[in-house]
Amino acid sequence: MPKQKRIKTDYPGVYYIEGTSAATGKQEKIYYIYYWKDRKKIEEKAGRQIEDAMTPARAARIRSEKLSGKQASNKERREALKADKTVWTISKLWGEYKPVRAPKSIGSDDNRFKNYIEPAIGGKQLKDIVPLDLDRIRLNLMKNRKPQTVAHVLEIIRRVSNFAITKRLCPGLGFKVQLPKFDNKKTEDLTPEELGRLLKAIEEEKDNPHVAKMLKVALFTGLRRGEIFRLKWGDIDFEKGFIHLHDTKGGKSHAIPLNPSARDILKNVERTESPYVFPGRNGGLRVDCKYQADPIKKRAGLPKDFRIFHGLRHVYASLLVSSGQVDLFTLQKLLTHKSPQMVQRYAHLRDEALRKASNLAGELVNEAVKHAEQKEKTDNVIPLR
Image 1 (tube, rainbow, N blue to C red):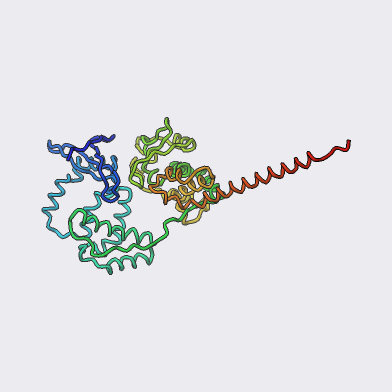
Image 2: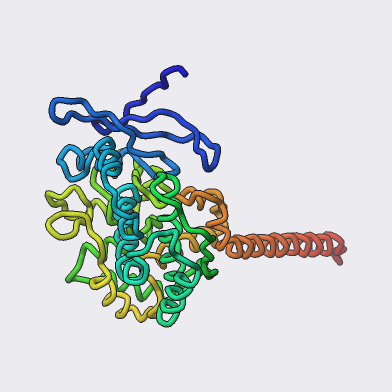
């Protein structure tokens, strides 16, 4: 087999080759890292673009952790696994799985594992788990948690089982995990009056100007909360008018246009020594701002269940589609969705805009007909003179 071409990235010690995804059959990038340790060059695979949601930035972070000793090399991990004769419990598998999980949701997943899975089945092996074990977890959660949370918890167990099988660590579950069905397509929107009150509350916010500007950015760009948190000054191209997004929900990098309103907001953000536009504590990555955003939502009199960042993303999308000037394909690209199905929830707004345009056409035609008839009557009048 000929040696595949190595393609450099913008990150030192990170390159990729072109491969094919076993899951989809589509072409994908396979990222590798190389570094020096104990005077020896180590070169190893970081992960696949689709299967592992790997990106150049994430591969660079893995390389940095291995250089600093926070994470063992692939060879060291394989040798440790061979020497380790302990039983592969769910908790042990989770500890092995976490380093290869995409970082965007690992914090939330880790909390779910510690709170709901570990106390119930953390000490068990996958082969010893029966459907009744998962039924107990599901029933306990459904007492005070939403179906979506239940699905997330059970999905963790399914992923850990698949991971164990893929890495040939131990046998997986002997049955299929049944996830509860839930409607995850709720479109949160605001009436013009509610939007007006929210904008007024944002303008009046003096204690947390960064949060106020973040909400405006969400409204004018449709960016996800996490994308705003991770936004760095180096990601904003003020000259060419683009925002470059990395480690998005779909695992790909995107560039979206920087409109004049968003540009003005970002230009007026006070810069600090942090690389992040809206940094958290000590200039690091912000992880939440619910405590600062909730008072703004309360002053605006918005519904309690309105998730402000998620909601403003929907408002952004709804305004564009209902204008009748933006099609769903364009909206999909602006929202950085992987598939067109994700924007189908806005189809009714597009249909309404088309209906209004059609009604307007009918009115214009009728007006033209009336005008022609009136002119004809005028032309047929015989002057008495």
